[in-house]
Length: 225
Image: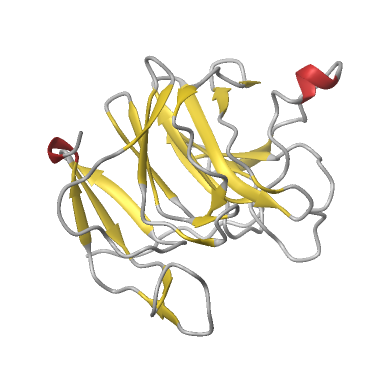
């Protein structure tokens, strides 16, 4: 029988955060909690849950010396994504109440808890939040979200080859999924399954006619180029 068995206190009180499982630990990055400050560029916080000891811990802030080093560490945000490739967690997107949305790629080395910003090339996705991110092999796929510059929902798919650090816009065949944000996506085999999210009834631009998607859309990574 499937059931819940453990009730734990002491974790961060957040929504719209991003979390990644690494071995027997879960790394949780940022997120939103009413009453907290999202108007300054303080460092994003990182909480770690140990599934063996069933305890939470908060990593200490990274010491930065100089403006350039400070840019290696993402500022506090919500609506971002995080994925794991080998021993590196890639954090992308999200927004802050001062800076707005972000399209800088940040990387977190779990072996030494060090942040860095990889040098990327190609067609970098526009800054957004509420998108999804999945990994297949060494490739990260970004779908949807609310794009800040265009001020609209997106249904684009972008991919990042983490071996070359090159972004590209995916040319997918078939009828695309409806533009949306705050959906979920996961990869099984070579297919990405997208479910839920918020969209607009009439188009990609936000109005008072919101709809919430209840259909599963499937994107086959083998059929794109």
